[in-house]
Image 1: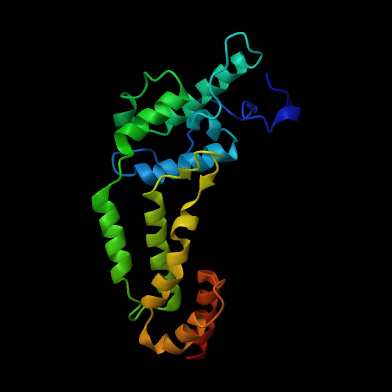
Image 2: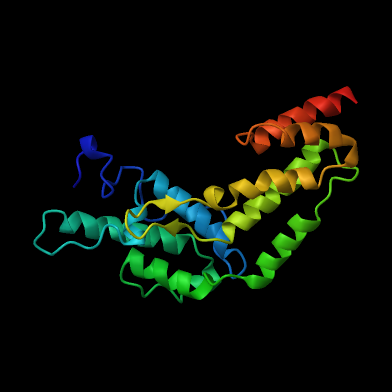
Length: 217
């Protein structure tokens, strides 16, 4: 057993960890894999256990001091994952022998890029216009589409250092132009002001500026 002082150890299980728990509130179906995947990874990341499903913490030799605890923790993660799958699907995955195997099996079944959905999200982003929406309503809509886009892409890992390249690093530079393009023409003045500012301006800063202008109209 991992002592309480070693809570940073990925193999540590607290008294509140139990096999009947689910990692996410919305169970996996055939239609929500990418959103579900993100939620599961966030939950396991919070528990410092992503390495178990990513393969960064492989099963140790049977004579290794951590072998028993590794198996115990792996069984717990398998239980969490199975409890996070809808009842009509879970039977097809109950035979997996490790959390890593289960994760890869789920990825193989549902992780293929959904080109139709990706096309729809990109299409909606390209055609989104503020029109009669308030700045807040427009921002909420475009931000939701960005979140949808992010869930369609798996995390990308550096082959050498294993660090994760986040979707923000991939799509971040396109968000401000997308946000500005769809604005109503009455905001052309502040839009030109934003475009003339330093490269470091964020969408959040631009949004704040637009809210201030809107309040003065």
